[in-house]
Image 1 (cartoon, one colour):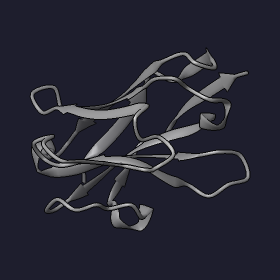
Image 2: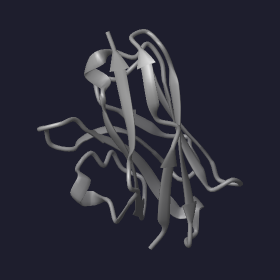
Image 3: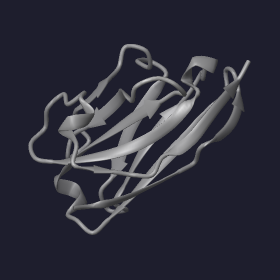
Length: 125
């Protein structure tokens, strides 16, 4: 299984931006569908975005559509989540996930094989 390490979280004011990174190792990164999920205190982990092998296909949760952008650099074995116009309700631990297999709009956490340790994003009002 691929190993994943997230970075880039932090504290930001509402309306601000952050870019999360997820570095992968130990697998053929270009053959993994990648996803971002988040979990707020007291809530279940929820889907944020996913991207295909090549980066040509993406899919977003309605709550982040138009504000967040997922991308990947297969040469660097890294997937990114650019988050703009952040809102207090975006506060959560953000997790990177990987799924080996063909592209699909995988929104359930149970459809992913590998997970990172998470990075905290806090948006103040």
